[in-house]
Image 1: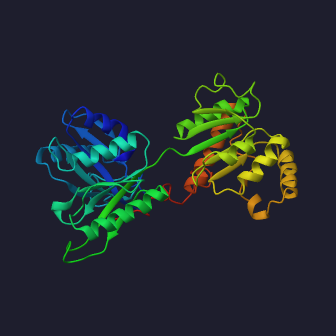
Image 2: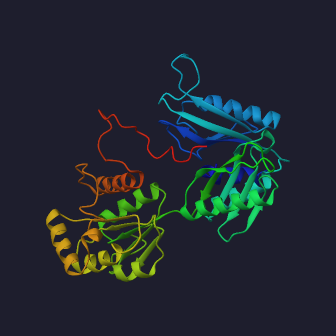
Image 3: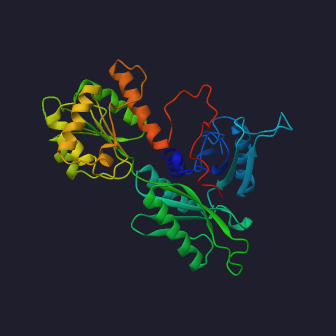
Length: 376
């Protein structure tokens, strides 16, 4: 549900009652992964999506029902060859959805409100909810913040709550949303519990080095993908907010010096558009030795070969050089800055999601990847 936190936070601030349906596990090919959510308020307004359209109508009705009876419920939607009129996923997969009412006096409303507030503000927090277990525990929520503080309780048993908090903190550190099965203990919770842990983290960074014409289009593409985008160039005449109004930051500094001192993590994307050795070589020498997600550099193949030679002379190993994506971007035949930005953004997505960059037409592999790792 944290994927629609901004709107849901507004709803809670306005005192609205609503029900939220959250994907808690998937099987096979499915359009949305765990954490995807659809919410319906008491006036019938709907936001979000759990399936890309296949089962939205049925889930909408489940939300309305939950608002009326006040009960959380888990339901599976899948494709059925036996009933052509059955509600299911046309892609052939299955999704398990938990529907939770959030009414004025819901016991979990305060926890959910805090979680939505944190996510809407871009703060680091993890929301753990019971998605499988005794009916009376479904929907119970626990919020864990990055500083270790927490709010709420899942089962009221200290040992299980401590385990849940530890699991939530581990997923928060990794920036992942996943289902977690707690050990079965007959004295605490017969049958065991499964939690869905959703994490909210600040947006990943995209740092664009080189205040060139292509950079403005790449800034827009990076923002579309949800990145916090910084443009950095050593030349103050080019690195101006007027030229890059959509960037979150515009920095005047030598690229390698800025990269060395600015915060980065395992989600950071670095795009080098300068294709000048005096900027590129010191910068890439730094970047290729850092644990960041994506490092790409613009330039012709001739520029790339010269760059690789210079980086070898700077002492980089073959393993470090193999991390460099150059020339940056997928082969789309791009010519304009916008087309080039699209090709770069497409490669960033493919690298993050494990895509091939090849056309889907005629391919037999599943379209949707990396959705089965968080099954309940």
